[in-house]
Length: 291
Image (cartoon, rainbow, N blue to C red):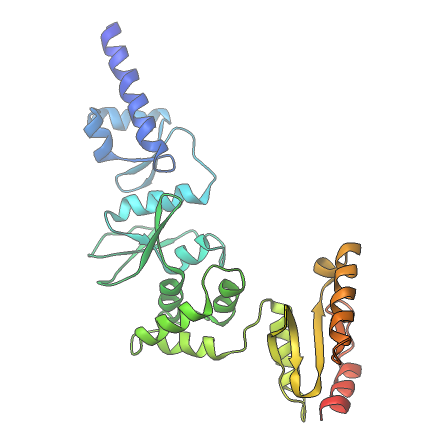
């Protein structure tokens, strides 16, 4: 092999590395051929461990990356132009589900999937570019999951609570897509009280089972404060704490200042800690105050 041939191979590998770096470490067979590699050379790079097959016609270049973005990028390259992470794939991107073995994407035309790639087809779907990837928007993701009979109540409110999407945007989207699969389930999820944690949802379910006790306003605003549970007609607030989020000395001081401010305005405040609350005693207390 001549020095010129070696230099040519080194240049092509460097060029392939540049292309892969823009795609979370992935490159397609078509891109490799465009750089100048033959099918035989590509096969040899696979044998040597320089390329790792991810999907049909898509390889990871060099070392396999542990980043989920690398797997998502490979899936999108395999699905082709215009495809986007969707359903459970998009939910994992937004941090609502764990990254699954089979990655779901949506494409504008029929595309082939494989054992680790499920491709859906849709004529209309909203996408947004993030981290160099196309992903269905949060509202589109929730609609698609609801259409596939996924439970979205918790996910809807957690995405709103974390600032991924606003409740107003979700309501507008649900109205605009009225009649489409999943729209009714999304609208139903939005009609639920806005909760920000599993502890809040658990407590609300418990209150609703108490005979003679009205449901509170969840995450209600009182002046500059947002309180967890509010019964405005009875001037009662219950704040739902956990040892993890309210156990520090700083947080306890902050909570005390909030409580003092509310009580100075005639509002009773009670704190209920998830780790040591007494449902029987609290039920009797709420019936006495609110029944």
